[in-house]
Image (spheres, one colour):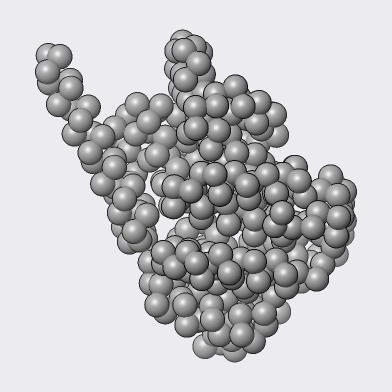
Length: 346
């Protein structure tokens, strides 16, 4: 066992409390919203969107953050919020520049370091990110700083050190809410999946499900692990509730894959067509934020290999990381294979 589930509030209560806090801040937003209230609202909405797989919450968080800009007490705070939101939606170049300007205008060095470390990590500047992550973890060794350091170490293929750091982050958690722990377990499980350690990933996702069964991306990745292991019915059982909870096309796409694996090809194509439309609508609004997931979809069940190459190329230009390079190489190989196959048929 990785986590003592008994130390945390139930996941259902934690999510209900999160929604209650959002509702309270929403009422203040209408009545007498201050900068602090609006930024707090945006952060909570991003968190709920992350946990429940709700893109609509991310959209509302963006609106709250922009509302905050109108009542910002100083230029530094406004620049920081703009940079933070740009990073959230993967506009990394803009984010780094805005955060630099916020620092020059007098915003907190610690907050800027944390935000810029995220940008540096996302764009493959691991050495520079490591300097910041290590300093932040040393100055304030909590679940967030140690967890962020662990995720970076995992991306750097320092898996043994990452495992130790993930465990240290959990041990440093002094709260009773399962939300920080749940987010960390999710990152840990995803890291294991990317290493191809499906059994390890499943153990971690089961722990996540124990403390926070409402965590939609965690359930989605359990379905993905099950499908990769040929457990089609298990994957379907994990996936079906998510189609009602989440508006993220990733789960619709995965549903199509499961249907295809069960031999239900007509239904699979219908669901894939719906997912394709949903992805294109998201890409029209926020191409940077969804390019990687959409590329993966279109080279697979989405069956548009050239579109996948274009999206994977755009993603690689945003962030030149080992993962983005692997995605682009995979998309190109898939497009070439399909092209050759079509040529032979012709």
